[in-house]
Length: 322
Image 1 (tube, rainbow, N blue to C red):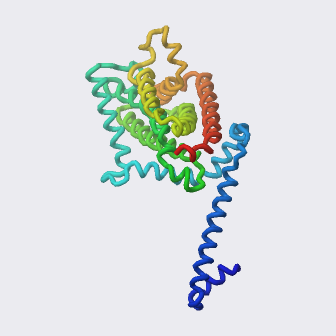
Image 2 (cartoon, helix red, strand yellow):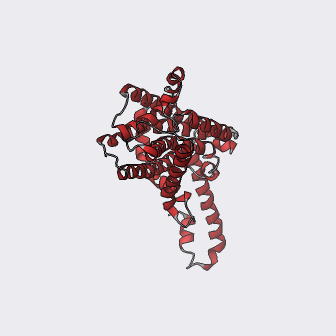
Image 3 (spheres, rainbow, N blue to C red):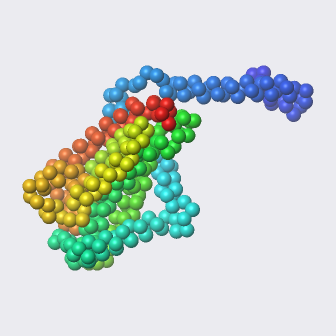
């Protein structure tokens, strides 16, 4: 035990040592600050790790697995924080998709009188379910991209005052988006069966057909959350592009309604492939083109690794900008 620690431990028995104790306490406090600074210096060394370290899939998966507890904790906080101080709490996660389902069904099914010939339940209800399935798939992407530009900027204390793995924050946003998508999917399947639809074994493939959208969303989360630190107007641009994609993706209309000359162009949109694949799995019992799904998954995996590498290479400058 050091001299300072001995004096502090005997504070109650030695009344004349208060000046010395105060001096030693200040020394210990300075030592603690020095230790924290040294730890930050080790963590934030000026020499940047090689890019290949972040592009290594095995190292990437291993890092996320080691931090799985922290990811789950922040995901739960993200979900609960959205409805904090509200009377209904998490019940809003059920009310919101239900209200949207009714509103979009009325507008596009009753007013505009659009129909899908492939809707198993048929009629207006079938149109609403098919429409809702497309909204679920696109909603994962939309929530992630619109939240990304302001994600790191909104938590300055995590950037400047503590040593924290900032790369986990985009994962909590994705986890929240997946939670709400899961709630909406359960509601969709229950209503589909209640209206006479047939449960299918292909429903077990829903996570598979949604995987490309999840990977693309995660990659954009990392990339856009990093760029949002340096480009504060990025949020407005991303919101505009997301709104455009919402209407050019076949959500409110079947892809067959697009002129044949443009269908090939639309099919290059990974979101369009994900929407069509989800509808096929739920209502038709088909997965679609496996090659298309594999290509979309590969593109999503590349975007995820590139977005993660970009975030890790630029995070050292966050504290200088925020």
